[in-house]
Image 1 (cartoon, rainbow, N blue to C red):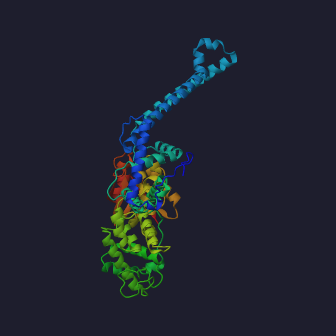
Image 2: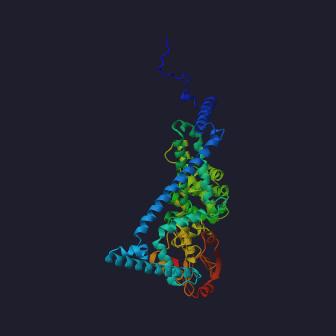
Image 3: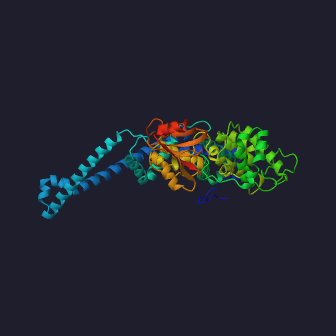
Length: 539
């Protein structure tokens, strides 16, 4: 057959896409790409390439393009600015007034208008300079919430209300700068991202045929999903709800088994678990039938038909969760939450969460549920929000622990009006955040320390009442001293309070985290220190 010069030759070697998993085939394509890229480099550089490999060429080439783009952008920007200046100069009344030749060419009416406008500008500039000097003087004055004037404080708060959104963004940036401590929420969230990506890598090979762009999109989506949970991982922010009469009727039985398994200090938590599980109703009020400690009844939902035995198994199960989570006390809220989620999912969750993330987060609780649903082929697996659901039935002393949780961003940053006004470290900032941690809602005060009780009673008169003697959970305001704090506990005549602003100044968020303490006073000592004190007691 004669060769046809117009006929296009067809490449004889065809590589089937289905062979993409072959190591030999991957090497072939990598080698082929490298050869072609090298040839392109030489062609573009007229045979004078600075790099021997595509890996070396790429960053240098990007750098060259960036420099060229920057130079071109600079030239265009400069031309634009010069053009604008030239045009503005021709229209500037000051230049025309100072140039007598130009002034003589202008009509009388226009000349008067230009002179008038120029004088107005000079007057405004003069006023602005005076205001700027006054502001600088104000900034040099010492500021302390304990001895502040009401006018100064209200101006700060009014300023906050006007620029709320801007300050919120700045406050969030400031939080990001804080040191990352081992086991805190940010570290665990990073671990969440790493874990999700590690699991996703096993499926990435199936995406190669769709291109690198899709892979990058998948990776970005995974990280967005993980970090979306960050702002909701800092603490329990739900409002306290009461226990039912049915649960309270079991208090004696719960206490008996709690003492038997040496966790009597966790009775309020056990009552809250029962409330969430059944509301105290049915023959299996602790919903403990599926626990490994159930040796008398079938291990299936509602398999236990004896309420007393259900409570015993439930208490024993929770005791085991506390041990596995290494909970040191009821105040150890991070590990307590881990134990609670373990009660719902099974103790296997505790080891999984600690190994992969360092502890409990709402994000990994959701991830564990999703993994189990996929593994078992079910629509539901446990309750990813179990911790929040249980803790809404627990009193403020358990919810807030014995010290503030500054990772609870809603309490200390996002919703705290004093944080938005950049008043970190003030006693009002501390009292607002601690109240929100303990009760799960805003106390409603935004004023000076001595006004906080009045503002709280005005906002929540149905939940609090004015008193001269305190109860645990009360907010106190000084009468003679501009100060506010929280009463954590009352033991006879001794009050245990928490208060901020020990150094008497506004701080950064980092410093404010340390500017507080827990202190004991007798009622007479507190009255003397505050020059009179008033309490808003929970009803």
